[in-house]
Image 1: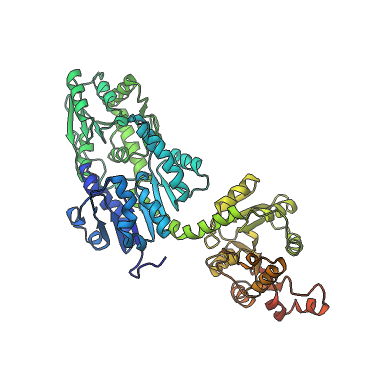
Image 2: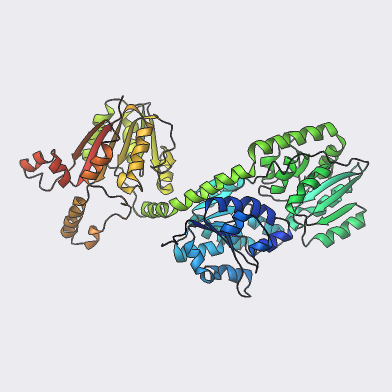
Length: 602
């Protein structure tokens, strides 16, 4: 796809039906602007924000970086959110085409990304932040959980990357699509803004704080009932909005429970509210990786939370907070009471919670890692998709080419202790080395997740990585092999530099690669003999074809010793002269394939 010459661009897709106006209603627009959009604006020249509202960026921020690089694309027309999601790639066709990648902020917003991928080939990275179908089920819907399940089956296999906020969600996504490219990226907090401040008022009435949506899955009816059972006089302070407020107000009045509804508070003002409370409670029936809990913990506020979902990744019972069964009102009341009556425990839990968040959940560090993942996933996506399709269509059998088997038999006589096969395919060379090198470490490296799964099923050690970025320490291997791999790489030079890096001194590289353009003559001969023009089609994954001369120029500067030979020539089986020619530089240039053994200096 042709991109605009103005530099890299990313498209931000909010949740279905959302936008900055919607986020401002919940006080969350400041967080999106100051955290997410600012980090993406620092990494991309243009950031398109596809809103479901008729809005302009100037209504929300004066930040000069955001106003220079972020383009808010307002809603056009009076479409329903679902219809508008389907139409977005057509309405803003030019902007979608310009995007190098789309970043879907929440999974329900993935519909336009699927359309853009289909229309323009644009890769997308999506956040899977909580169990969306489960939340819909708790809200009483019978249809939405099924629709979410269908959307998961459509979107996750097509995503260039999936960002999950908890290990539970990572397992769920992997269960849906085992080869999905997933990164665990928990929510974070600005640990400078959200920090302990000595502002708690004291007095005989304690303050219990809840921050979040007023919706069914948040389980607030049981929370109001639990406050009524406390042995300590306490007021429940509720910050947030939702359609359950009127029912909760009536319940509180009927039960004689002191509840103060403060409505929506701007995100920047939340630290003061956390620091004025005595404890924080999150009674949800289901959770992803709750930002608000991390913010409360960052302020050193002792927390009592439901033992559900992502809460369990943040709160260790009796160490960084207290846990309770959200369906047991008595257990909820006991946990809150414990924090209100035992000040020593509350101080200890609050301090431990702050230390945990400061160590692991700094939002800016997490967002820098996220931006790198999105960039890398978008760059890899077209190539990875090509190789996944090819892996599905063309499994590799276990038969070794006779020429390669003979050469590898010679190499294993040196008894290498650690062997790496880059581009390991379905594992046939891993099996060869394991059968001949008892006790040696034999590892495969493969770009295709499909092939990696096949090798793991056979019991082989394998990592999924590009040859240009090998995830191994310097000098880790005695022998590295690239059997018909170099022609598949985006950068043969970078791949060879990485191989040299991971080889120990004295280690050896063995590689084979087709010799272009001679290889195409052999393809033509095969097509004629088979009377099948399809045999002349070149391998679409040969994105970096190499000639004998170019291969020699790549190897010579990088290795102290290079032995290069051709593997086959036209007519060698019938002519002694042609067989003799094969070992010469001229014969190499006429060979169908090339074989090289290179050594790294001692």
